[in-house]
Length: 113
Image (cartoon, rainbow, N blue to C red; front, top):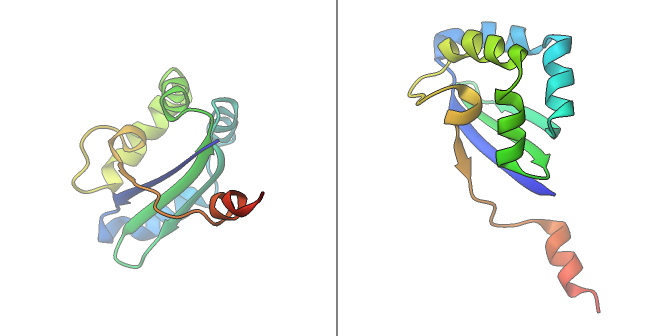
């Protein structure tokens, strides 16, 4: 399972609305994420708009391609794009992917004989 962590910047004047929209994501969007391999997906938002996302998937490329093929994702991305600053493309493809430098379970597993 691939662990993916990413960063985006929500416009400070849009934080309240961004948070409200994520309190009740469309059921068909939730179903599409699950069906296309986005698991254990969480978003974390700092007071200044720094957004950190995390999810697990078998393949980032396949998960993104799967969502790109859905009608609901096209609608969601069109609505969500206006919330971000310095975004190159749609939010689900234009994010900055962060490099994992530590994972507890991986290191613990490496200690096992």
